[in-house]
Image (cartoon, rainbow, N blue to C red):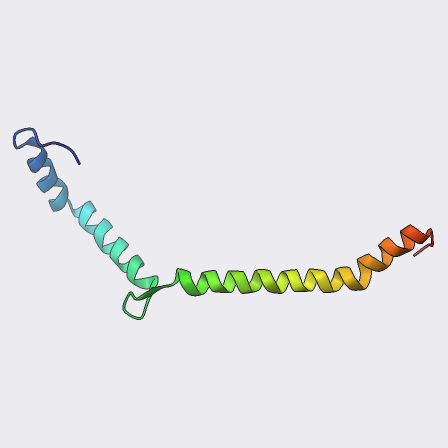
Length: 85
């Protein structure tokens, strides 16, 4: 917070509040905030998106492990034995 020096800061504050650009900013920010909220603002959109990302990462890990067990481990074993794969 800034210290008020006379009425200069108060005048500037009132000027910014009355500026139509500031009013547009408030409206746009408010609409965006409401668009990202679910259930009246109780749970933000970030919670389900975050859970989705975690589940997607688990799925990708499972796919990699499955492929590694089926293909890559066989190639590594063949290299250890000196066989051609």
